[in-house]
Every structure is written in C-alpha cells, then in structure tokens.
Image (cartoon, rainbow over all chains, first blue to last red; front, side, top):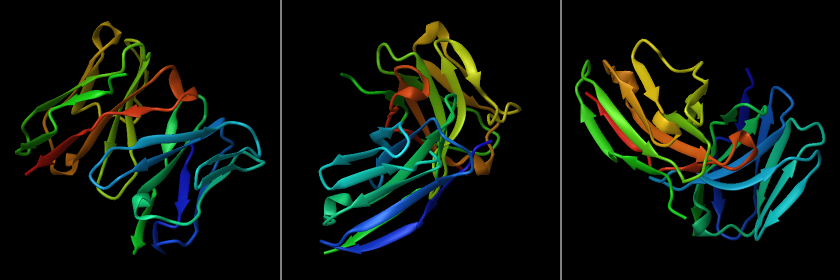
Length: 109
Length: 114
C-alpha cells in the first residue's frame, strides 16, 4: 500500500522566520490534502491539491504539488505563534487517504 | 453547519474490558471513517464506510474491533476485549464523497487502557 513520509518530524522556528515541510509518497497520488492539528485538538482540513505542479496560497501558507504527483510541500512565511501545531499531509489513491506522521512546529517568541 | 459529533470525550478502562464509541457525521456526508491516532503519530485508518456499506476495513483488528453504521448515518466502534496497546485517540471523520473532498474530524475519544 501507499506510504506517505514527512520531513522534518520537528521544526523549531523563531517567530518571524520562514520554514518548509515536505511530504513524499511511494506511489503516484490522485490528490494530496494538508491538515493542521493544534495541541490537544483534532486534525483540521487546510487544503487539497489535485493537479500536477499545482500551487495554492492561503495567506502566509503556500502549498505545492509536485510535477510527478508524488511529493508536496508546505511553506510558511513570517511564522507566528498561532502557527504552532502539527501539520499532516495525507495522500489519496482515490480510495483511501493515508496520513504522514506529521511535522510538529514550535515557535520561539 | 454542525460538525462531527463524538462521544465520550474520554474513557479509562481496564484491559480485557469492552468499550464503545459513537459518532454522528455531518448531515449529507456519505463517507464515514474511524481513525486511530497514537500519541506522536499520524492518524491510521481503521475502517471506511460509504453510506452503510464497508469500503475498507483492511487495518481493523477484527478479532477485537468491530464497527457498524446503521442506516448510513451514525456509527459505533467497539473494542472487546481491550489491550494496553489500544490506548489512543479514536477519531471519527466524514466527507461528502470519499477522498475527493476534505475530511471533517470530530474531537475524538481519548481511550486509556490500564
């Protein structure tokens, strides 16, 4: 079955800095979704990418889907304390959504 | 719109006991999922329903776990008997139609087996 790997596992960021988290799949995906889970909370849907090479932005967050539809990235600019949490990518093969292990982000004020 | 409702929020049981979790998805969402999330890991799919039929239960430990979705609406997940390694958060999610739409997760049930 498909496996989704995320790196890094942890990201410690100074407030105001940028960072990127990466997601790689062992198989070609039909779409990829990103979720955010705040400490003690549940995953919340952020965005879905479907097309090869697709780029979508949500304020300070930029999401990319690779040309081969096997990898994706999330780039956050000017990190704020509200960005704290774990970011999961989840890859779909049309039938099942498989989650990565997540990147846990902490922010130094 | 109302979110995905789950109960209870917390449950502590002894090993070998049984436990049941309940989920009510968003109205109109055809697909319902139960995920297990162990601390520090990503959610792992246990079972996926399309209306009231099972689409995927390949990772459900069927010797101890069971789930049903009567009338294609709410669902229950049961564990009997529980083991220490079942300690996790059990998340219910629903989507409009399969993986083509984002999932809405409930708040989860945190299960501790002692």
